[in-house]
Length: 200
Image (tube, rainbow, N blue to C red):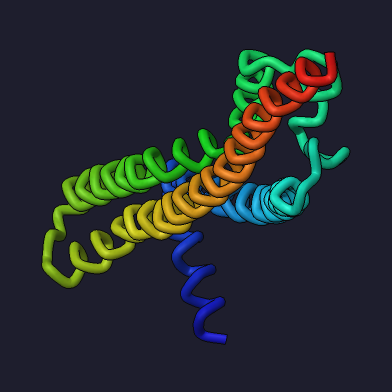
């Protein structure tokens, strides 16, 4: 297993800071995919609910379905635009939960990797200065090993940034359905009022 031997060799030669940086980036990597998977299934289920509710209203239903988030705002007799806006704000907040974490990982992981590289290079040059041997055959492997931390930081940042954009788009799609439902609720309200006046 040459890959395992290379990994063991790298870990044995790495400093504490480099190993700490790589563990930190590993936690970021696992967190990214945990947030992505959990939020993806949550938003998909919610989008399906609101889409079905919107379709039922377009087919003639007077109100949203019971499983829609707007149901709590339309259960009262006097449904107001302000009340619907409150529910829409709550929906927007709930749909974007966890996105700040992905944004933080995407923006900080390259700097964490760069920090590990800088510390490794400083450690390498400090060791070379003490030993007195500064040939290219000694410096090149040490520098290439130090750059692993930077590469790891970029490797973690790419899926975090992509996941952030993807989930943000899903949240926007969800909000679009909720906004359309809210518009239909408000457009149905004057018709009901006119009907009440004509009966009187």
